[in-house]
Image (tube, rainbow, N blue to C red; front, side):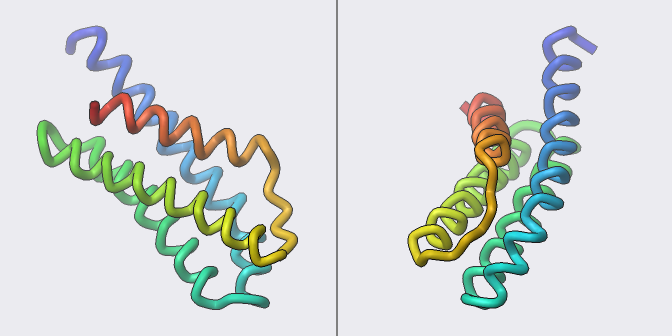
Length: 116
């Protein structure tokens, strides 16, 4: 296996682990959202499921199918961030740290590099 390919696969494994960490971080956020906005809580939940599932599946694919899955994962990560922004805009105390937001941005950046 070429060095760059192995390096890319290791990076994607780390990103997958980061998505799991983000899901765990979003559990308390989802609980807060459920008290105020069931639709937004559901949207966040679905975005996180899509992010993690597409990263996992995409890592087993090649070519265009991999790019499509990684692009979908990237869009889902951005959607999750939008849910956080909406929650804050509606005045909900979500308790999301800057470090968590940075993890989302790291995932988005890595996926962006993979598809472009």
